[in-house]
Image (tube, rainbow, N blue to C red; front, side, top):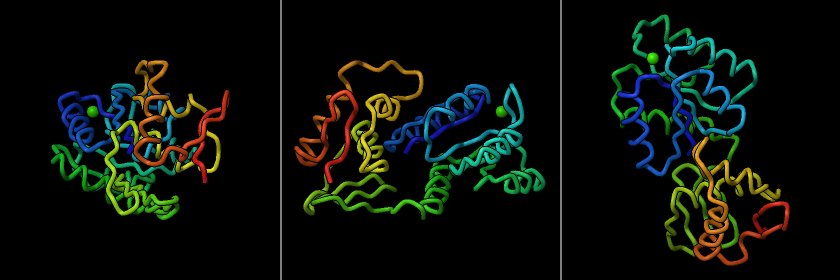
Length: 218
Ligand code: CA
């Protein structure tokens, strides 16, 4: 999963980011609403974790803005304010859930899974493709009855191709999908991931469209 974490307190954000990354997620962390807004305009996230008090503004206002733009990504509020009114305000503005600080890392993880499972009704949880069964929720891949282990970046590539299938996905979009926002992309890294996916999942699974990008072979 690709997670957007908006939290200005590094002491809270860093362990949470590490905890979620240990679980094969990509976590992009920003400490201001401005940076988070720039990121969310260019990247599709599976879930947003939103602090309510940021140095450049109020998370509740940002939440309203996002929902006003018809963004449907699940949003979980991280808040130190344990007042009932804030929770209700957040839920009324379109948050899917909230966690009260200081939070337990496993609790946040469990909440993420719950809201993502709830929102997954538009996207089938399991995708069947040839001899593959891919679980979009827990990222497990089974090929001809045997589990296949993918790295987080290989999963990132496969996930985008699956969600956009049968379209051709431009290489820039795949690179954006596998690298944390702002990180430098090595020129041949995408080819290496595609090559390993072909080895693991079938050599003609992914077709190369020269000058255009990559697509899943039906
Ligand atoms: Ca804060």
